[in-house]
Length: 501
Image 1 (cartoon, rainbow, N blue to C red):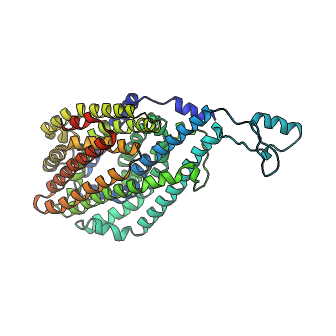
Image 2: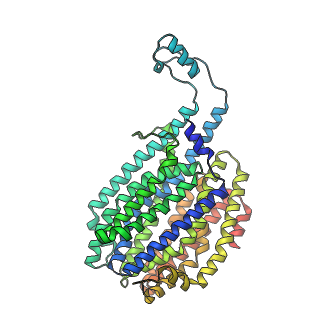
Image 3: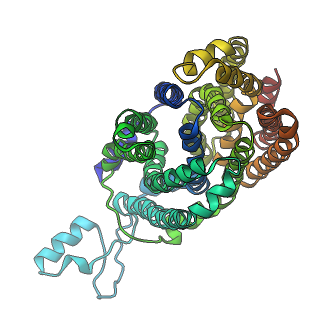
């Protein structure tokens, strides 16, 4: 099976991987800003824009809770652990002894078996190998991939079908402040977009395999293709189909997200087989690790649903304004902090599997230093030039000056917590790489609970600013608790001081 080794040989270093992810993340986010500019200029803060933003909530809930972070942080450590154990087995001398089979024929070296079988006209299938070879070992990896594809695809499809059936009951409760016209459009868009988490399920399993082998290029290119699909929906499908064309653009983007990752994945020689997997393939370990993370991500999506719920009751366009400010503010977090965290995760997981704890601390601290050196001056820059940043990206067409002012106010509040938002992904992944899933999950739940409670308390008094204040306060709390937990687990005396500085 040369394909899987070719895949591994083309891996990137941590720094190169971070650069690759960062470059494509910048491109993806720039395309994302362009798509938001298109939405803002063509629809302003009206019915279509509000409905479009709200329609993402249920599909995103399904995708994030079941697939996105839960899969990557659970799958990659188990996959790498199996890989390291397999390499150790392969370094040992092969066992050429004879082992009886059910058909009474002994098992020796595979090539020798074939020669003996041909000499005596014995069916070769009568033999079986005793030792685990590279081929049989990597079949274990394929079994893990197949099992995750089977289990998660069935789970996501089932939830998506249920959500499609009950969308007419769920959506009105999600956006109680919307007009009947907005609610009807949101329901229609939501039902179309429910196809996207099913496609993303397959795409992200493939992406996790590419991450595990540090093949970041096509993995990082996928979000770029996703945004291109959405832009295609705005520019081409909307004029043809009306507002529902925007939703079909999202589905088309998710399909491109999958399609672009298939070529490098095909190098593995993978063939799909419907299976629920075996204990030997580590399926139970992945599912066990996914459950707490899935709960945390579900809670995060409940947080987003809460923001949508509260914003829908505020003046028209509040949903669009909040999420425009939120997406703009999280842009540097995504392409810098998350890029470094994603690139470091398989490296940290591999070092932990190899029990190289000093190298683990070194890589972690180096990644943190890079994040802070970039994000601290960037936070100051964004707060000082918030008006220019918002006006440059969103202030076009129907997105008038009043909308821009509301957006930059929210943007400034959210930007005040840019540093804690930036270190959270790395702290969490450092713990996940050590297969410590409970602590970051509990921390996330505490932060989310704080955010939701604060949002309900502050929004009646401060409007959209209350939502932003609640988010920023919970980000500081989340980062502080994770820093303390990471310090205790990793014993890296330097990084906690770096965080505070």
